[in-house]
Image (tube, rainbow, N blue to C red):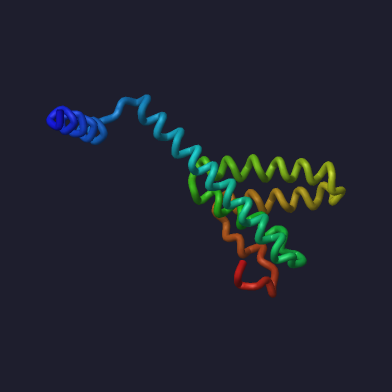
Length: 132
């Protein structure tokens, strides 16, 4: 019995290290995309939570850029999550909050800047605590 268990484990190890079929690569890629998307959503939530905690006037764009930047650094899944969350939030905010199209446009500019790998500190207001 032990011999068969050893043979089975050895076969699994050899199969894992061998060239994988394309379908397996796609599955692995989809799993990585999903992990990145979940991590990106967490990054966006962390930036939102920090923005609420800081409650600092003029820091909105910084936290938009930082959340998108952190999420996009995870890979395509994180960038996708950042775009979906940003677009949904700005769509909701422009309809409900009454802040106007200009504020939405500037928020989306900061979102794109962060997703493209731009330094979020471009939007950092003077005096924002270094914790953020």
